[in-house]
Length: 188
Ligand code: GLN
Image (cartoon, rainbow, N blue to C red; front, side, top):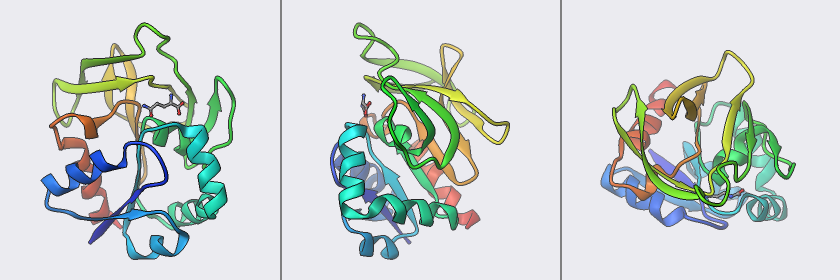
């Protein structure tokens, strides 16, 4: 069982460290043909507009959409979560549209742009959360479940086999969310 980590731009190395800590094999994904070698895909944080351009240039945009529609588990953190959303605001941009959520980019403003906070989750409470120019999630359907919250706002949500976090679980030491994501593979 190998998990793919989208490695076009951004903080993909930190996700590899998390999977190493869980003794899960992983592979960086930069081309469409590599997607066939993995059972799930992590979309890291970074700059979603840049990733979007590279996803289009490489042909990975439609390939990831198809894989997701066929049931491949997808886990997006921060910019990766923005890519998974159905709608993106501030500014508006295209996205893969894999989850019934709308996200507002850079929603926490400049002052709160980056911080380490304690949030809550039924998986682990409290849960340490690293926010870096995080977006805000608006849930658009009852199929979307809240996995973690911070100050009463959803910061990690799940719809089927897709998971989106506006913070960076890969930047802490807590492997809870990565382990949870790997667990979704058992349901494939
Ligand atoms: N602000 C970035 C964006 O809109 C996301 C930041 C991040 O991934 N830490 O793409």
